[in-house]
Amino acid sequence: MYKGKTFIISGPSGVGKSTVLKELFQDRDDLYFSVSATTRAPRPGEEHGVHYYFITKDEFKTNIENHAMLEYAEYCDNFYGTPKKFVDVAMEQGKDVVLDIEVQGALQVVHKRPDVVRIFIAPPSWQGLSNLVLDVQPGNEKVQKRLVRAKVELQTANTYDYFVINDTVERAVREINAIMLAEHCKPAERMAILSE
Ligand code: 5GP
Image (cartoon, rainbow, N blue to C red; front, side, top):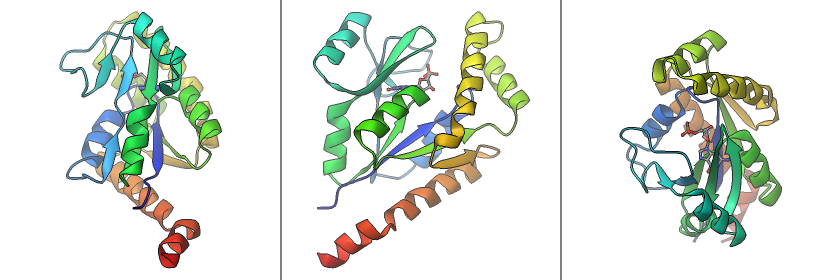
């Protein structure tokens, strides 16, 4: 059986990643979305085990100590991390795994698994991003923190393997699908299939 690949999708808060990912996952049982653990509180509509595993700081610490996290990072006063086991199981089943994680965590995964593919999703403009973030959380001081963080993240984008501009969801999804397909056409993978 063929092993799946891991794709990291990063991009500033408010860039519309969740909408793009929701569309990407329509009718795709060959793709696995890695549900992260976080210490932040659920937002309205978010479900435990679907959007995140919402856990306490102590539980998060225990996971780190047990080496259960593929990566983790602190982001705007909360911890976020990828449970390793589910990623490995999905890949063994031949599924491609998508990690929606920020840039520090992405770097940790690259060091552990250099064959991971990193895709950066950017907003069409800085003003567009500010409006998006403000739309989600108007008048919230946390918004400023996220915007500062977004600026820092945009500066790391050129270290990624691919850069997708989210001007329309359809286009962003089309580009991500094209990237995934191209990555499966690399000689190492194709020649392994031939030799089988
Ligand atoms: P939010 O609080 O808006 O859901 O997510 C904030 C940021 O944390 C986003 O950039 C998201 O990609 C990132 N994030 C979500 N899960 C993880 C994770 O498991 N690890 C890391 N490093 N970042 C994550």
